[in-house]
Amino acid sequence: MEKKAIFLLLCCVKIITTFAQNNQNNNTLEDEKYWQRRAKEAEIRNKAAYHPNPFNVTNHLNLRARMTLEKGGLNSTRRILAKKYRRGCLFTNPIDECWRCRPNWANNRKRLAKCALGFGIGTTGGILGERYTVTDSSDNDMVNPKPGTLRYAVTRDEPLWIIFSTHMTIRLNQELIIASNKTIDGRGANVIIEGGAGLTLQFVENVIVHGLKIRNIVPGSGGMIRDSANHFGFRTMSDGDAISIFGSHHIWIDHCSFSNSADGLIDAIQGSTAITISNCHMTNHDKAFLFGARDTDYMDRKMQITIAYTHFGKGMVQRMPRCRWGFFHVVNNDYTHWVMYAIGGSQNPTIISEGNRFIAPYNDFAKEVTHRINPNSPWDSGTWTSREDILLNGATFKQSGTVQQTPPPEKMIKCIPGRFTGRMTRFAGPLKCIPNMPC
Image 1 (cartoon, helix red, strand yellow):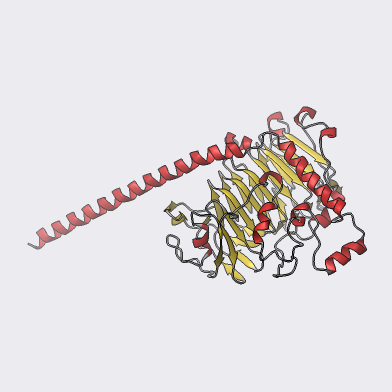
Image 2: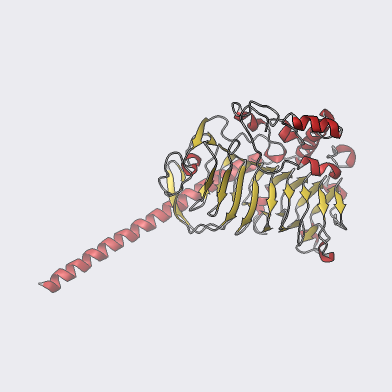
């Protein structure tokens, strides 16, 4: 009798186990279908976001910068600049001019959505949604996040303008998967993402990340994680990027600081495009930006990214950025530190470097700004152009590409020369914003 009972018990266990395995397999299959559908939809949107005349975009940014200079943001005397700063505001580039000197920024936060320039122009984030205030810094439930947490806010389906009730440090237990049409606005609070996983933008559009400090990011172990209000599924281990942009478009990252991630600071791959990274501060990291992950990802030919008014500071080593395939406008950034090189690339990228300040390290073997993966291959050389850059401490910039690949000088609007870059990046990183006062 006991043997029969044991036999029946074993049969029940086997049936339950088989049912659980079949259910898990079904869930995995459904997840695969879900992400395949998202990928196809995103590919169509990303192609539509591609700008067929990229030099029109670079010209527009440079024109706006020159207009800022003419208004006195850069070309004023030191005395005038000092008076402006004592009054509580000094804008030094056209993005900041759009909103920084307005004391009512806290009541009119959404004005920020009108200020993106470069390839990310038109990114409006959560402008069509309500404000959502994060009041809870915890991140304990990946599937059913607690209302009031950042994870709950970013996984809602509707547009949201997300702000923070107070200073807080958030340790993300797993990657934070952000849905489309969101603004994460850290102004008015000291918001730190630290010690856990990073931010993931996968097959989404129209996201603004502003005013965050992101540091000491590590890989997430994976598991069941929510990516929208109506879906969660199994995720593998995350890479340890501070921000990972995957198959997405119209992304603007502004006035953030980054340091010390397990992998990259910002990666953009799988056909991501229409991206601007501006007014950021990078420190203490090896491989900063990876734009295009593999030589075989031909969809990255549509990748278009602007890096502007950003300071690459102490402890930076390489990849500022490292590019494949696409079109990259690197303008008015301050490179005060690198160990290996500043800008790298392969697979025929177009890299337009304008008005940057490059201060080479004292190492005689690291004076060259650029790094080509296969320097003797025409396929890998691409078009590397330097205009109005300032090269200090023995820095050199190896240009390449034919004249036909870029418009003639008379059709290009000149950027602000590199000698102004220190001023233009003076306020890179998160700003200390106080309500009823200019930032």
